[in-house]
Image (cartoon, rainbow, N blue to C red; front, side, top):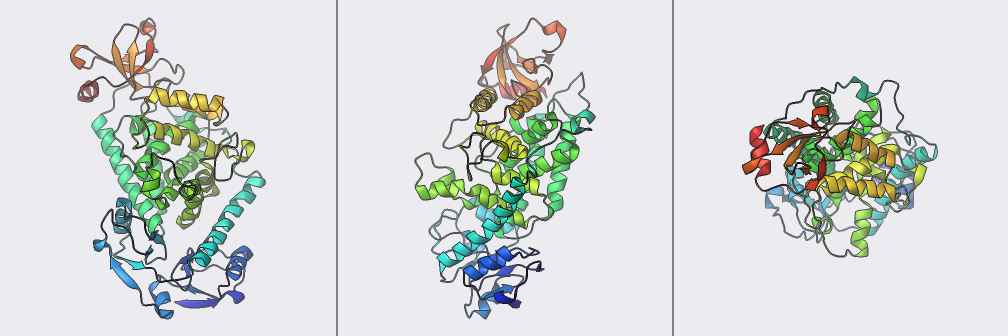
Length: 478
C-alpha cells in the first residue's frame, strides 16, 4: 500500500492499482489518469490522503478499523443487509436495508470473492458526494465530446459490413435446440463479465471481443434467420446478461442494415453487451415493481445509465462509443427521456440503434409487471414511437428490413386460413416472410417462401398468438 497526500497530486499521473478512501471505498479505478477535476473533487470533499492498494484490507487496517468480514456462504438470498456490504475491491454491492439478490451471490462467485466487509461507520454523505463528483467527471468528459460533435453520427461506410453477407436463395430451418444452446453459452460467457464489473474487478475484454465475433459469424452464416437467437429461444426473466444478448443481436442487425462498417458494427455490439450493467445497482424490488415508485426509487432508475457509464470505466479497451450508448440509451429524440433529457442531434445515432433494440427485446420478453407482446405487436409499437418522435425512423426502418414485419418466431394466419410460424425474413419484402405452415393436428408442413412467385396468391392476414402445441411441432420438424 502507498499513501498519497491529495495536495501533492498532479494532473496526468496514473496509478497501477485503485485509489481508496480511508473507509475502504474505491475512489478511482486502476490506471485512471488524474485530471485537475479529479483533484479538485477530492479537495472539495476535504480528503487529505488517498491510498493505493490491491484491495481495501490494508487501508482499513491502517485506519485502525479491523475489517468485519462476512463469508459469502453466510449470505442468504432474500435476507436484508443490516449494514452496507462492501467487496474487497471497495465497492458497496449491497446497501444497508436492501435484500441480498441472486445476482449478488452469482457475481461474487464469478469474481472469486470469498467474503464481504461490513462497511465501518463513516460520514456516508461525504463519501457519497465525493463519488458523485468523481462520476460527474466521467459524464462531463463524454458530454464535452458530444458538444464537439464526436461519436454522434454512425456514418455509412464505403465498404459496409452487410455488403459482404451472402443472402442465400434456399434456406434450411435452424435447429432450435442448437440455437437455444448457443444462447445459453453466450449468456454464460457474458455473466462473469457482469459479475466482475459489479464487484469492482477489471473484466477480461477479450471475452467481449470473442462474443462479438460469434454474433458476427452468426449473421454471416444465417442472415435470414440469425434473429432466432433473440426471438425464438426461451429467455430468463430479470436476467441482464440474457437480455443483453437479445439486444446485441437486434442492434447488430440494425447497424448492418444501416450500412455501417464492420468496425462500427463491432462497436454497436460491444455497447449492447454492456449498456445495462447499471441496472445491477437498482434493487429488484424497484426493477420488478408493478406499482407507483417513490421519488427516490424513480431517481435510482433514472440514474442507471449514469451507473452504466461509470461502471464501464473498469472495462479496458472500450472506445467512447459503447460508453455513449450506455449513457444515452434511455434518451428520446423529443427530449422526453433520461438521464439528461437530451433531444434531436445531441443523441448519438449509436444510442438510437440501441434504444430501438432494447425496447423491442424488452417488449417481447416476459416481465413480472408488464404483458409480453407478440413480435408483430412490438414492431408496431416501434413504428408508433418513431411516428410520435421518440425513436429514429431510420433506425426502425433498418430493424424492419433486418427481421421483417413479422419477425422470426411469430405465428401468423394466412389467407388460405392456415396458421404458420415465421422462420426467416426477406429484407426486400418485409411482409413476405419464410414460413412453416402448421397442418392439421399441429404437424409442421414443408417450408414456404412467400417471396417466391408461386406463392403470390398467399398473404399474411395478421399475427396471432402461438397455437397450443404448434411450437413443439415446429421444433420437432427441425
